[in-house]
Length: 219
Image 1 (spheres, rainbow, N blue to C red):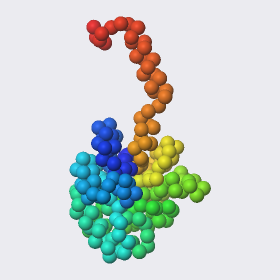
Image 2 (image 1 turned 90 degrees about the vertical axis):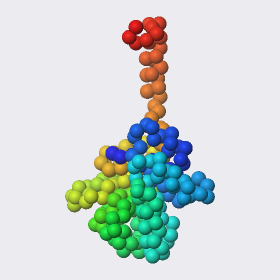
Image 3 (image 1 turned 45 degrees about the vertical axis):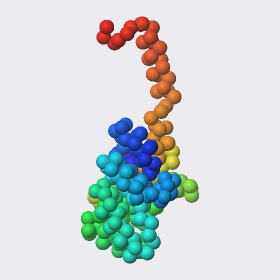
């Protein structure tokens, strides 16, 4: 599974990239609103520091304006991926962009049939939102499995990107459903890195090593 970091905070990205587990970044207008008014500068820095794909979401609404802005985003950086919400009025736009070879991440997908529609158009990523499913009492794991099964059955090339992941259980379910990508907030990634039993184990190993009173492993 690829892991994308769901943030526009450059400091967090810079600190987590050296771990070697970050394959890309997903941003959205909410993330960017927290990083000041120079959104171009923020996105330029992120695209420069991250070797993998960086999803940048359109903020226009009218289809003609969406198409124009999507092309601008695609030309902004070699690793830029255009993020477009699922909507019937954007389907012709999505079709045009995929025919031009533009990499797209279709977001706010909530049903297998919505996923099917954009998979038929050859988009790069399809982003079902797990957290928002669970918020309304729908089993996100079951629906995600239906989407991954759909991909397997029809052999679509689009990658399934599990989004709106808010806790470890949702992430684990995305793994079990064989999603291609999970996009996770930095705080959730930190929870995975740190575990009380891991930390306790390290303390015990260190304490036992100190009993030998040796300066090096091979002395």
